[in-house]
Each structure stands twice: as C-alpha cells, then as structure tokens.
Image (cartoon, rainbow, N blue to C red; front, side, top):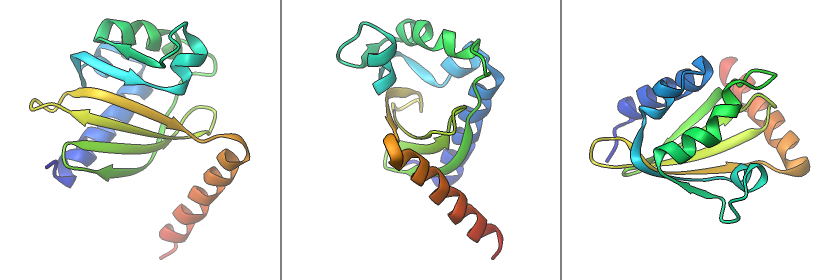
Length: 140
C-alpha cells in the first residue's frame, strides 16, 4: 500500500513537473511500458481507443501541450490514495477539473494512467464546488 506521505510528495512533484514544462522530468514518473488513457487522446490523435502505449508514444502526445498558449498549468486540489494507485484531482489551464488515476509498479513508476474530465455544465459546477469547499476549509 502507498503511504500518504509518499503519495503527497509524488503528487506535488508530478504537478511541479508538468508546470515546469520539462518533458524529461515529467517522464521520470512513468515506466517505459506505461499505458495512458484519456478522452483527449481520442480528440487529438487518430487513436480511437483513447489509449497510448509506451513512454515514447505519450511523449509525442504530451509535447505539444508543453509549448501551447496559454502555457500549461495544473493546480492540485486533492490526492486520493489507493493500494498501489493514487488519483490526483486538479484543475488544468482551462480551469476544467480533472481526475487522473495513476497505477504504480514495484519501483513506484506509473504503469497505467487514466484521465477523467469534467464535462458540460457539470464542469463549471464542479469547479465552483471545489472553490466553495476550499474556501470553507481555509476559514476553519
């Protein structure tokens, strides 16, 4: 089982890696044979399954995001810990709420990642609800 201190450290490093736009730092979290699934893979590639396999495949998919305008920026909201997985709940540059579930191997490298994106009017509601909860927590 992953302990909460390690999960918190990993999550902050993962977010910082993405915000640094350093592809090698980002990829250092992933195994060579990582499998990534995301609705955006379907939208941005010709991959109908929405799943890419291998670190080089995800590198090619992620690289354009690192040079985009506006610059990519993630804001960590929460961390959920499982037995050998974590789910990172964060906002992306468009303020959309994302839940990214990451499964780890024995070396604590990501072997499978799955992104879930808020949709439609629920996306705005979820973002406002997160703000409300964060505000309530900071006033206690």
